[in-house]
Amino acid sequence: MRGHGYAMPKLHIHKYEKKKPQRNDTLSVCLFYHAADYFVYQGSVIGFQYDMLKQLEKDFQRPVDITIEADPEQMLLTALSNNYDIVCFDFDKANFIPDYISVSEPIAYTYPVLIMRKKDSSYDSVPHIVNTSAKYYNKLDFSTLENPSSWIVQHNPDLAIEDLMDMLVDKTIDYAVCNYNVAVTLMPFYTQLTIGPRVGDNFPRTWILDSRNRSLNDSINQWLSDFKETNKYQSLCEKYLSPHSYVISHSFGKSKNSTSQYDAVLKKAAAKYSFDWRLISSIIYQESRFIPDLVGFGGSYGIMQMMPVTCERYGITDSSTVEEQIWAGAKYLSFLCNIFCDKVDSSDLYYFVSGAYNSGPGHILDAMALCEKYGEDPSKWEKVAEYLIKKTHKEFYRDEVVKCGYYPGKHTVNYVEQVMTRYNGFTLTKEE
Image: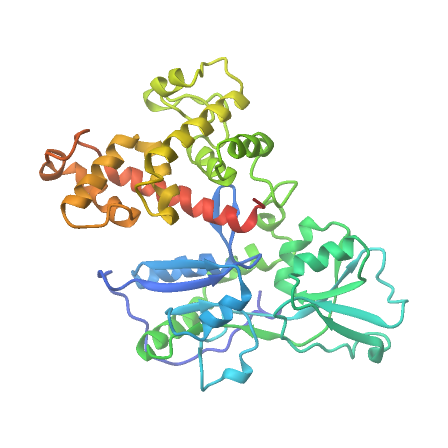
């Protein structure tokens, strides 16, 4: 992508450290939900900055704990808080440098562009009202357009760029502006719209670093400097920041709010049992990739991959329709919810439910009992997961509080992490 706004200046600082992960070595990151930076593609969470952070995790050999935030107001407060090692958020940092925040080397460059309807690209109407979305700070320059003085900026502090694009489609506005990398991501879902000329200079996208961690910040900046010289970085730019990106154009199929062809029945079944349909969708993807007649290990069957005894309990056979399987699966998930809803922290409920869906509720209850016995909080999934993994050891699976015996819990803990990572991605990318 050199020559197209992606070349980076190189800093000369200390080589970043590679260390074996320690208990307190986790890098804490807050990532702003942004069209190209974090989304779900074919059941997996990916994105430009998300993939960069995962590469950072690999190269530093330190776990990276990523928190996703969708509220720009909250994200701005987070960026100024020094509560995270890295905050991934684009905003005008000029007024804060260097007194309040530490800014990384640029991770990429972008620039503002006009967005308009395809049939309205002649700029005939005067004046030209250009709408910007909430938290859009970058300087605009219309000097290269016809009649530069006729272009008037109208800021919309309560609207996102997707709202403005919907208004363009509905013909309630004529022009909007957003950054090129965002425009590339959204264009596949707004086929009536087109990317117009640039209306401003290149500007850097940077991370905000904890100003108290000078040594770590030097390592992060050196890593960025090195990584941007690699083929891997160039591939990420092509994958996420190119108008010809296959991943972006195919990320949501025909609808950016769709997870599968079964969304309608998922929503109906989930509504009946007061459940989030996006969690059911995430579990189905994990279990069967939406293959309706799949037969799995141990005789698990169908799109929900329920075991034979569970299928029998909920009336599912090999002649049941996909819709019947989904309704049965939703009812079973509701049953699991009822087991745990009064026992666990509400924010962790879906972790327990998805874990019980994989292992059966008995092993989760065993891990909770062990957790309580050893003085840990049995309402928190993070603690219960530790004891679920320990159920491979005789000391624990033969404990008097354990009712269901030995269990290889690491598989279920990984299962829950994958289901919930996908679910959290769905909550940001798919309407409830």
